[in-house]
Amino acid sequence: MVNFNIERLLKKKKKTKYWLCQNMNITTRNLNRVIHGETSSISFKYLEDFCTLLDCSLDELIEIKKEA
Image (tube, rainbow, N blue to C red; front, side, top):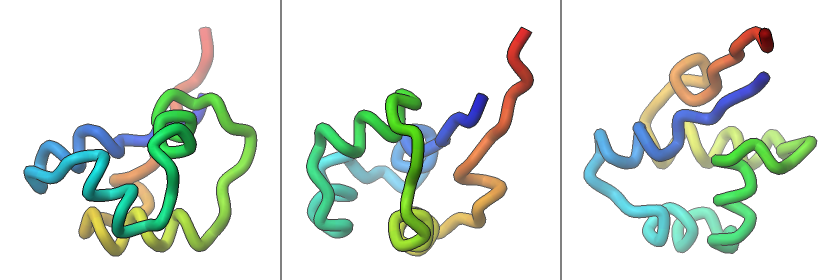
């Protein structure tokens, strides 16, 4: 299972989801879908934007957990 650490990284930077949406030109609904794992794909552009704006690497952004 793929998890995105977006909320944790936002908290670390003291930024909001609204700030991230405005800077990425993404809707809140789509951001929440990514955060809650309700999407089946994500563009490289979004991955690059997340890493740039959250000042993180892909391994900090994405976490893969084995399902039980």
